[in-house]
Image (cartoon, rainbow, N blue to C red; front, side, top):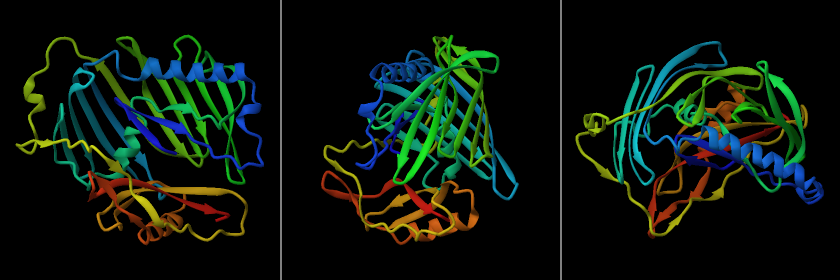
Length: 336
């Protein structure tokens, strides 16, 4: 699923490629779809920073691993300015890792680098709240009135097709304020609770993300609107110099040449995914691969790393020159 960054959050676009033999979304009720789209648009508007330009976010989180171990981390962001002219300072700690990234206009200074733990990308996908938009191929089934945490809510029931696999998914919004309280899509379950007002916005204080029914991440966040000025020393470059954020006039993404998937198994017809993060170098080879979202099986995760390490690409181009690009890689295990 392609991901688009907007402000402090990442919006998931649910692109669902349906085989021609499966009825298309055109057969769904138009008014029902309009109502579902309106609910998600409202959820985005009430939680996505924009009306609150100056804010501070303080986040603590705990990652749960398949072997039962856990690791704690922190993430902070201070942001000031107006759209197109902002200054941001992010600071991250996780185990022995510590990094600072400062961006001011079209300049950036960072100590984070490629060694940033993949758990931070997973974390930022949840902040300040995991949001979504429907693609034209999503099939809306119903909108149900319910109660969540003793508050009246509406839940959108919709189907997703991945080849021969059918997912029954659900997104739930609070009736009064419109924010998204529950996300159940595929093997991912996210619960957002204890929302607090931040200017005109509503942001969750507690977030719990589970994968395959197993708790993966617990997040505590406090988002506060900043009144008045911010000490300019906050945005001092951590590396003592600035790098310009280079904007390509012409850009071409990396294109897969050889990206074989693992052979299917015979256990069942279900498909589980492992999502990796890493780089596609100027040579077209992959490097610095890490598991971003586990398949739920350490052996399959290891196989995914071996598989993607063999993939080759036509490298990305920026103004006609080959460049290294960060990328996510999805490995599908069917019947495994």
